[in-house]
Image (cartoon, rainbow, N blue to C red; front, side):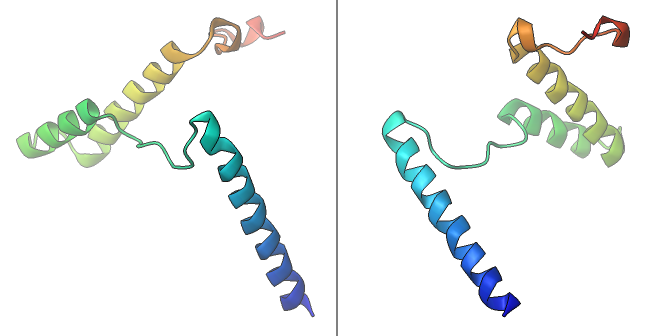
Length: 89
């Protein structure tokens, strides 16, 4: 009985997802995941890895910080993260 309910729930999720994607297409939206790295970040990571100057973890940390900084710069000012926890409303 539970498997029937799980199957029904899965079918509902698939149908709702497809409906949402169909309604987004006319607005120019495409259902996909954005790449985690920009081409520049991927090239930098490959260059650092090939040079064998940093460990894989160090490269990941460096790229992760760059990504986080780029996301923060791209945010609208009213949604920026406060630097000081006491600045929170």
